[in-house]
Length: 430
Image (cartoon, rainbow, N blue to C red; front, side):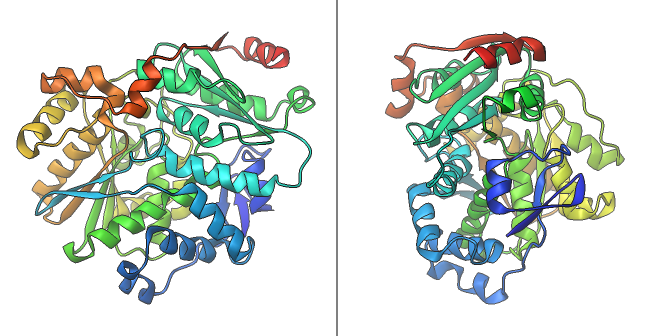
């Protein structure tokens, strides 16, 4: 499998290089040189195969024989031992639940696949690899769970101080061993910028062999395409599907677009955001204008300069009208999100998290204009946002044991200002 940098199409590497050194020196992002199209027969028979069997076919189409069949099967088996069920709410609306993994967020799909893939690539290496990752909420917990006690890998997680939920913070800061957390006095974009700058710092390269577990790593995008195929498998008889994707750094949406480019017979996507509506504004005006991120109750989407936008542009040749054929934009306020959580509970007896609720609102608006089957992604268990959800539905919710256990743990985190000099000094001392 060959991949190129979005900033330099002539910068071509193999899959191992792209996964282990996720951030090209030209500051682009890696994308497959070729996105193969799966045959129509694959989709006609998709219901005959399991999640992992379909994922294997998608992987082989992308990777060819780069990873031998038994090893690839082992990677998939290790990564995916949990479901991604569809919950059909009515004749025209479904929810794709992506929170049944160990950290109870959709990031488990990418983190666990990446951890298994990296372990395969590093099996004969002597030098330790350091995963440096920024999180706006759920990525860090999934990465910590995926890489915990993985031999040859240590993890450093950056998160914005005071801007993740209490439960999310505990999922970042209570692991110990090879997992360390750093709270940054800033916003997610500051954390992301620190990671990108550190990747290109020659001084730090003398001490660390860095890789990334953010959605800038292509190993995160590949497995996220699997659950779009699985959703289609479960809803194949519903006709053309439209997915409303709660979006922050836009890796999740980009993975869906890759699946569509590979031939997945779905109609379109909705880029659903909170008031950090940079991409919906682009879809409306044709101008991409990054801004400082703003804090909301749907904090995993509090991103003012989504990295994966460049990947989406590479898929469509930066052609605005072509992007709009497959993606429309939507955004909502915190007040609208709270009302949506209450409405979903009252109307369907279903409890959604704030991110899924925004996806629901996107589906609701779209259905008024175009009648088809809509699917919103429920990206995290509502218990991860307990205070917000309980406020919306005006009743307590019960936390699953795997979440409740984190609340009894003791936080352990380093602290840094958002300026790079302070952060670099911290890394040099770790």
